[in-house]
Image (cartoon, rainbow, N blue to C red; front, side, top):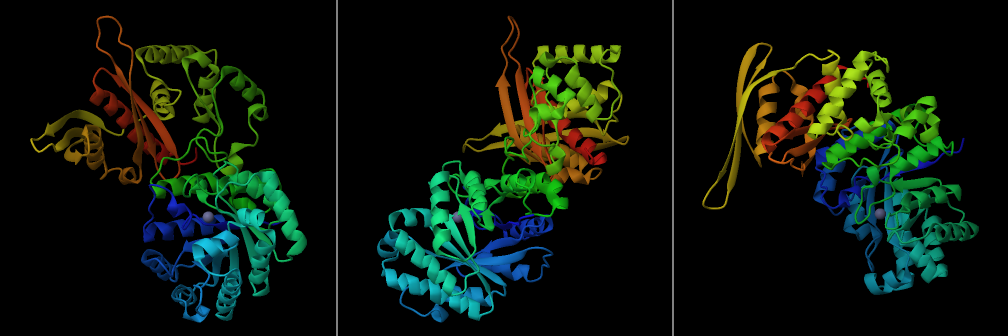
Length: 524
Ligand SMILES: [Zn+2]
């Protein structure tokens, strides 16, 4: 079986994502997670130029990695000085890492117009920097920045930079599509020409500006690149980097190539969720292999075919990558998905039974009132368990009060108080929030956390409100959809009422109950 090295750059390229900022502790947790999954190289950042990264490398000295090698990142030395005088290179050499990736200029125009030095000096900068780091006992990878654009502009010079890196001891030369604008056939053509002239092992680093980062990486592997660089969930600036989740999925299930160990493939979805959670972003539902919707089936005819054979609308078995098949339920789809859903929850339900009919009727009534379960899998599961008496209450609400106050200075305050009974004991709590729903959420969890501490590991990741058409003579209802997320999963819950706070409350309670149910029976 052919082997491909995976090089993760989530901690550097990924931290460039708009809206994402990793703390040192976040970075340590991500590194450990990637190590457990079996990623070969984890790029930690720039120990030379960034105090947070320097602290990270210090912390990592105390952390034992089982599989991965931690890699520092830096640029070639500055023009006109010795490598041993370069502050950043000295920091890297002193950071106690065993491997480093150095990036250098490949594109002649970048050398003369951005770096403002001679083409010759740039070649010296590449070889000096690599030689210096090698002489300090480091394994060195070389990132050829803007390689494909550089090659198109001046192929001879681009090849000279690679030759300089190879002859000074770089172990892998990584061809970077830094601007992400290269088409796949162009990229493959250039790699073939490089292979004819340069004998060192090659790697690939692509950005996703054409939505081709994964395709380009896979094509590069096909052309003989032995190392693939990318980020989890495709994080990265602009349109992101090559998504390692998809790449790992493709290598394992479509190309029979070894990357992470086979036994770890089933952890892929969970690691992807973990990284979204730490990044504090909503996990992308449509992500191949690991997305919440990647194996979700909605249309009735699809579902019928799926029951006969899952192959009919799935390219792989979702369990291979730790994901799961979902049937989206709506009144339109009839009884079949309900029966399937019941099976998923280990509830016995015959399609023709009066129980099934009764439940379908309940569903139709609720949908008529404005509930929608197709998107709200969490609420649906709770509804079903309640209907089939498979549900034990976690708490009873005695009442809540929400207050919003606007003051003269334009500031707005929200506070919620809540009374509830847990295990026959009454509890009262009050909390503030950014808005009334947030205050209610805080108060609810404050009241419950003593009994159910795991509620602190979830949070609301999305909140949607829709006004439903009012029937003549009645006030318009609103439908609230709340999406929640923890480190392994995401789920959506729904509430409907004329009062937006009540609608939110319904969705909020379902969300909390779903989390409690889910943690009670972990294997789902
Ligand atoms: Zn990059």
